[in-house]
Length: 384
Ligand SMILES: *Cc1c(COP(=O)(O)O)cnc(C)c1O
Image (cartoon, rainbow, N blue to C red):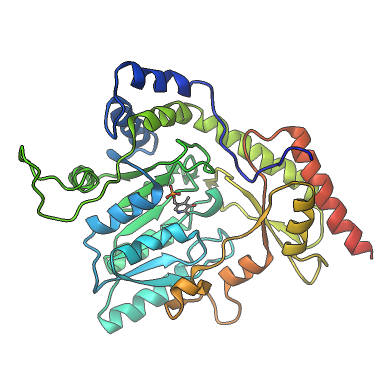
């Protein structure tokens, strides 16, 4: 069997070991230490925010953001529907109620039209949400001008889930820097990784100070162990932060490589009728974390599932686009706001979308193999 071609696998730079060794030599084997401090500073600088707090995961960072915004049992939180479950699980941790917002077709991210409808309704009911979690899928930033404007108009803060979009730009501004809080993930499949980890960023240094407090069991300043509020064990290890520092140094290279992989897919497959790649919004620069496309069922006789299965036979990992959260059994009965009146955009993307192997450590030969197989499956079927 040939080696498996993954969707997105860890890609080390070779410099990680240096920082890990440093942690060992100084015995900073703890969820704090010089690598954590430096990694926080470096990420904050990279995304042009004043401060950052390193966490054990991106999910933990979202949970802390909601806690800092005071989200509790009586509250509603809006969230993009087309995303990974981790975007919304923290809403449940906080005991709040999620309302899901549809996508629009130009970025696949939160629809400002649907968000406006939802905000208008909420205001009429006197139940404005405590926060809006906006996700930047597959490395592309959402329509931030429109979304930020609505957030300001209704006075509801944004938590930007930029777990998949570190290194992306929107009109020159870094992804993750549009909300009151931004979050990143360094899980093994993300564009840079610490094997597991996350980051909470903000221009509110006071809030991040509180985040660090909550993330270390909320210990009151006393020599004995004293606690007045619920805390968590959410900090990042100093060893893993060292991995993150080395990874951050090659982030721009990783973005370039993923964009080049995307461009090669487009060159090879862009002419196929009914196959449409995820667009890139004008004046934005995505990190193309994953190359994704849709297959128009009216023009292509192969379903995404058939294509994914065929690729699987060659030991190539491909996947459908995220299943919208409003369709998940976990969120049955939750409110949902669609973009339009006919088709639901997020459902259509789920039904027609495919994610391709896009890791920055993929070889040209591996990519050619993926391309060849896709062509074979799609074109053969068309001729039948
Ligand atoms: C990966 C991911 C997360 C969660 O990050 P973890 O570090 O795995 O907890 C959150 N949101 C999105 C959109 C993600 O892709």
